[in-house]
Length: 403
Ligand SMILES: Cc1ncc(COP(=O)(O)O)c(C=O)c1O
Image 1 (spheres, helix red, strand yellow):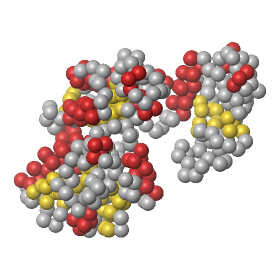
Image 2: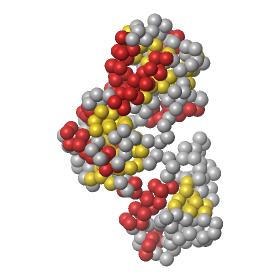
Image 3: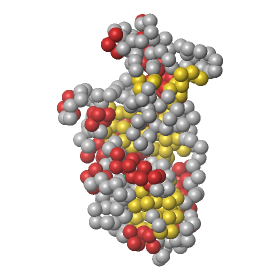
Image 4: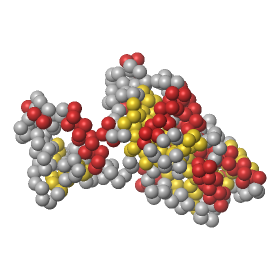
């Protein structure tokens, strides 16, 4: 079998590099030639199975992507093939196809190639981009609902604020970025899903300083909505033991989400949906990708202020929509300020608020049951108001996509 050092040509030009299945029957085959996955050691994935597919092959990764323990039993890659550009792209396509059934990526814009692609195999970013190897990037989102982008301008304002704080120059002016984002959604034909986009210091080299980065980058991707989540069901949250980011970093939406990821994992490990951060003074702060709010015994809506946490577009919109509930008498008023843990745990209602969860009731925080342990009426009313706003709100929050 060829070793890397013996491979001076792309695999298509070497004798030992056929990607053909070694056996047609059954349809599922272990790779035996240029991809040898045998023995013990450390590898990226577990056993890889090649199956017949439209393209002839598809790779199926069989173990979970996030092992809870070191990969002591993982298989070892014995021979690494040298690939031509077209072979590498073909493998990207095969790899992408194997993920089908999870999130579907409908279109991507990249300022690197200055256009939009609908081929998932081409939805890649350069490894020397400062965002990839140094985390020097910021991002934001916008929901796509019935062919409209929800709160696009509010999210755009925030990514531009984040980019300024991260000292990332805009590759284009705001209007051009907005146009690119809308055109990317249009090319995707997506009516319901989400748009995610990044501004990065750009590619150039692997140095710490971005001074060698040629030009800042913009990337955007459109993701098809998965089956509708059950927003009505109340969830459990836990207090995060992962330290909250210092305010300077918490108020910007940079790609440095490791604390957020670990916090989410901590919640899941403890049977919760999210872990709640407290700020450096012990007040309630936010969740890993959502804000929090409470309804106290006096029917006041309480929300931590945004000076040490991310200024959530959804939470800000909720504050506007909640004025209607005050008028109807369902709320006595609203207070944005410090919220103590005791106040939070004693509340009649607790909720998570964000573009992903919209408004989700919390029925338990650590060991404390919140209110009567059921989804609260104000949380449900606010969820209905947000969904209604996404479907038929004013022009200021709904940008039509010309398909
Ligand atoms: C840390 C954090 N807080 C709050 C939010 C909620 O913000 P938005 O409502 O704009 O989605 C997010 C969203 O991703 C977040 O990452």
